[in-house]
Length: 412
Image 1: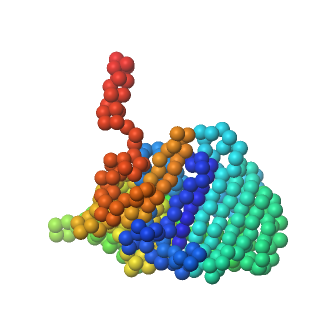
Image 2: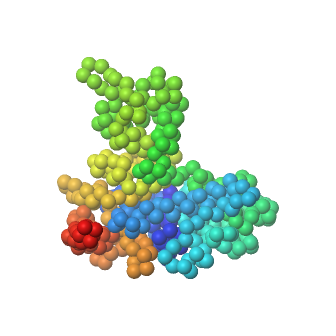
Image 3: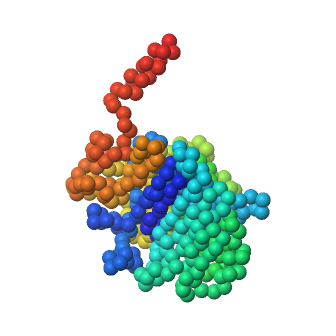
């Protein structure tokens, strides 16, 4: 499970910023305990984090930063000789950042062991890379890299290492090279990047997710039944797949009519139906694998009621028995509203804000860091809309109308 993600000099992040999924004392029950400790304190992690903020404040870039980190790891294996695997987007509003390295780091819990893995890269090479493991809570430095020098401390990382060092190019990550050569200790961290991260955005990857769900439903009857149930629960009038069409490679759904069922071509379904179908496949896969799902603009894909239900799925320990997590961006204030009886859809320590500082750099912070923090019974929706927590557009009522009016008058 993901514990922390840090980045600096990446996209709109000039300075070191951290997204943490470790639960705080403000958590009201959604966190689940892990078999690891920070010092003497047991660690619990939240299954869901929501990121709010004004337009262009850096919400999407938080998810994109993790995607860039993942791509750097995977491309270190798939590179072509003529092309560097390194792809980075440094902070653009400070010219000095173009010559400075970009920084990424994650904390993971895998199989009861905590790992801290990170690296610094520029446009041409890996400047630094490190992996520390914490079996039984004690830190072991498995490797520390400084440019072309890779150092191993103690007996934490076993087996032949110098041959892997020789195989590692200046522009390739040692973790990926070691995994390519089947180093058993480093494979789990590499495989987390390869297999356990889904990125869902409203439009960019929609065809790919639709194709994944269709292909998996075609070959896996249990998965197909699960998709059918989730499509029907969404109150879309769908009762199941048209199996004859599915076996021919065509995607059609059966719809309930007055006295019969009718088969409807997928292209003729509503955008909402197609979006939900494209999301259901990755969600089911995440629950089966215990994966991390990154959803950009959850409110663009789902009605608020459906979004709340997806959050509940991740928070339900029976549905989410394998520890899947979701980090999503949204403008949907209704998810911050307390329900009848005081229940919250989102715990206070699962809500984060993005805001630009005077340099145009994104600052990322949780509500739990505010002083004073939100009260247990506070209406977070009202607080956010009134600007108490930040992460809101800095615009006075009527300001946009006046500006547009003046612009139109000038055009005339």
